[in-house]
Length: 160
Image 1 (tube, helix red, strand yellow):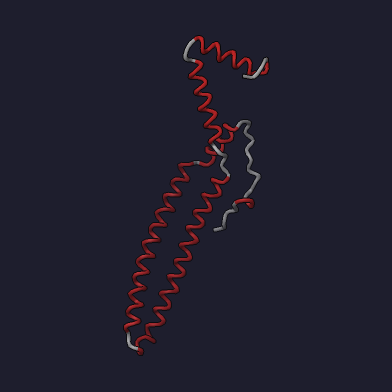
Image 2 (spheres, rainbow, N blue to C red):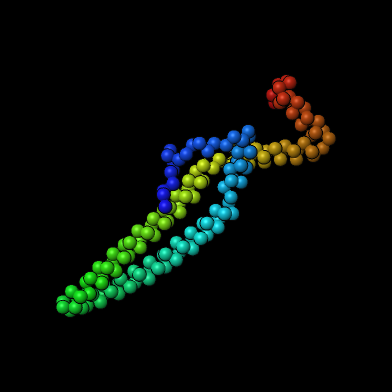
């Protein structure tokens, strides 16, 4: 599996043509497909947990084989050495594969999230607009004040 490009190496040609920050955030998260990513992360998490369990079992077997090797007579050590060495080599290979899998899983989600626009400014502006709406719909007097403020902010007068 190819390593995804991250940081400055990532593709910059994926800019959105959305006209507003809200549209850009909505477009990104729609294309991101969070449910699909959650499913992928669940599968990867299960595989990582399984690999950890297998690794723990293999380490116990290696520890036992090493103890048996140390207890063996010098004549028996010669015949046990090849199988013990092969066990260690296999475990190193398994650990390398496990590390590579975990790193690729991390880099894949990192790359996708690195491209994400920060949703905070959009969420904050929506919350502010909601607060403004709630305030302006509170009473007839508040509506008049809000309408006046809106009129002033349109460029017809002094900004408040």
